[in-house]
Image (cartoon, rainbow, N blue to C red; front, side, top):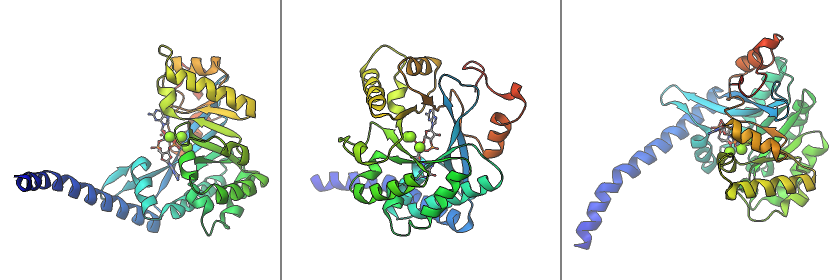
Length: 285
Ligand code: C2E
Ligand code: MG
Ligand code: MG
Ligand code: MG
């Protein structure tokens, strides 16, 4: 009987598992194709001072992959798959190259790029120790590293981040608040900015709940440590109001601006015609 049940389960689960494995290898092949054909592209999400929403103070660089066979892929799907295959350093290098192209075309706003701690602590980081400061000199550069990717690599990451910091590159902790149980690393890393994870921001603006207490605590700690705070994933005016009232300095999110390709960013946010710029929450996109 147990055997029959077991077989039944195998029959039921195998197609799912197989589909999942097929998807994984299709995504992996798409990543490998994009690396070899240089067909990744980047989009930019504007970053605003909450007290002055008209003009972005910078932008976050987000990676995009449109594959001819499987279509548009989200980094939320392909980054973990690439990571398991050791492809992250190659991808991060590709992003640095694409940002270099953007700078070469005259894009001068400060940019934040997402780098894995795997890349920061890996062999062959040497070339990036020249490329990243060069990008910083052409308009400002910050690297965002998630807390989770530090784990087990703090020593190596620390040295690299200090070198970057000394050469003018800023450091932000991404998805802050969900990754790590110990905050001790904040004492030893040259961090300037904490990006409050979207999951906390999502429940702000309704009745007070645990997220409100957590965000207040993050803001108080950041202030005491002299760190800039950025709220990610701001989607409603209520969230933006609450964050500003509680001392959060900067924000990103669909309310303020979705990630768009660099030409559109340039046209929409950096065009000389002031009437094209969002001037307040209501008028922004
Ligand atoms: P992240 O660095 O925390 O980036 C923010 C993600 O939240 C982006 O998703 C962005 O499109 C999305 N987002 C921004 N505002 C809102 C909002 O108001 N509401 C909602 N629901 N989402 C919002 P994306 O582009 O899919 O990236 C997902 C993650 O993939 C990033 O999270 C980052 O960890 C990773 N990633 C993206 N680009 C790169 C890259 O170039 N290199 C590396 N290593 N990782 C990357
Ligand atoms: Mg980020
Ligand atoms: Mg984030
Ligand atoms: Mg995130």
